[in-house]
Length: 92
Image 1 (tube, one colour):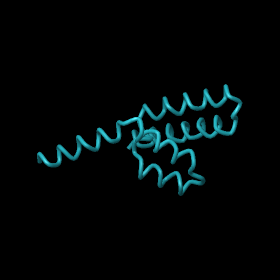
Image 2 (spheres, one colour; image 1 turned 60 degrees about the vertical axis):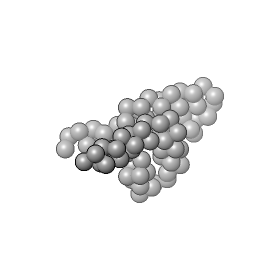
Image 3 (cartoon, rainbow, N blue to C red; image 1 turned 90 degrees about the vertical axis):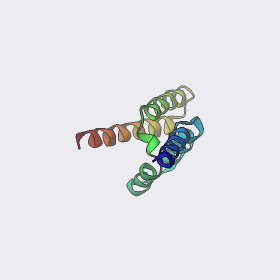
Image 4 (spheres, rainbow, N blue to C red; image 1 turned 60 degrees about the horizontal axis):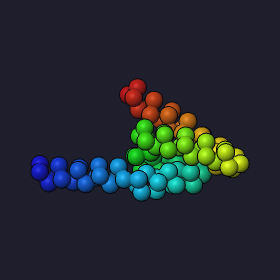
């Protein structure tokens, strides 16, 4: 049991790092199509956290301010997708 606790603590630390979140969001934003997005969700559960929602919102706003409509739109759409997935998971 102690080994499992240590493994969980390590996993939580890794998932909580800014680098892990950035890698997950990069993968999500690069994913094209439902299958690719599903793979990202499976590989990076951190994208379903509130931190990911906040990061995507900030990214969308910054991209819009800089005139990068494509990135702003992609970030907003990804955020909405994740919100829908989270809502579906909460219903179960």
